[in-house]
Length: 263
Image 1 (cartoon, rainbow, N blue to C red):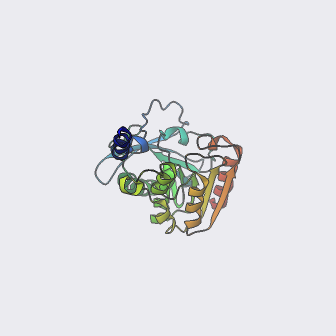
Image 2 (image 1 turned 30 degrees about the horizontal axis):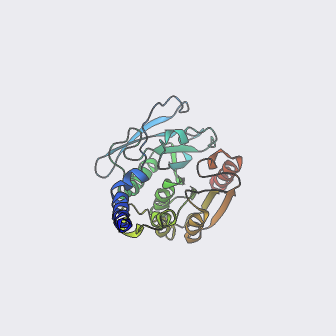
Image 3 (image 1 turned 90 degrees about the vertical axis):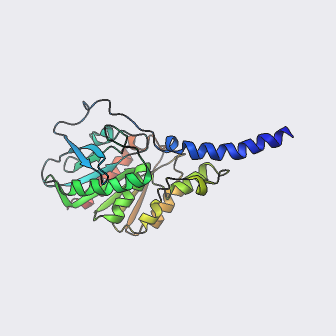
C-alpha cells in the first residue's frame, strides 16, 4: 500500500506547496540596476500609496505639453524602466510608468489588492501633472499588468486601453495550467480582469502572440469578448509570450491605435 501513502502525500503536499509558494510564482520582483538607458529628459517620480508606501517611476515627456500620455503597467518579472525607455513609443506621446511594490526601488510587498489600489493612485497623480493632457490618457498593460490596466480603465476616464497578452482571470489561468489543483480554493491573488472589462467602456486594443503558452489565446479572447467598449484584436504570428513586443506588427498596431486617440 506504499502507493496509497505516496498518493496521499501528493494530494496534500501539492496544494499546500501551491498555497505557500504562490507569491513567488506570481511576483518575480526585479531590482533597478541602472537608469543609464532612460531617455534624456526623463523625469523621476515618486507617489505615496494610500497606506503611505512610496512608489517610484518616471515620466518621459513628449515633444509638446500638455501631451497625450501612455501609462504603463508591466509584467510579473519586469522592472518597468526598460519598457518606458523603448525608443518605439511615439514622441508626440508622453510615457509614464511606476514599478510595482517591491520592484525597482518602490517600497512594500506586492499583492493583488495593493497593485490594483496603487494603479488608481498612480493614474490620479499622472493626470494631475502639467506635462500630461488628462483628457487623453491611454493605459497599457502587459501580461500581469493587463489586469491592472483593466482596473484603471474601469475606474478612470481613459481614452483607450492597450492590453498585450491579456487574461480573463488568474483563476482561469491557473485552472488551465494546473487542472489537478483546486485553484479556486487556493488562489489568494485572483486578478479578475473580466469583471473589470465588463465595466470598461473605452476602446480596447488586444494584442496576442501567435504561440503564447503562458496566456493561451482562449484566455485573452475571453477578456476581449467581455470588454464593454469598442474593441479590436491583433495576433502577431511567430511570436510567443516573451517575444511579442519584438515584432513590427506589435508596434504598428500600437501606433495606429494611438494615432486614432491623438486628437
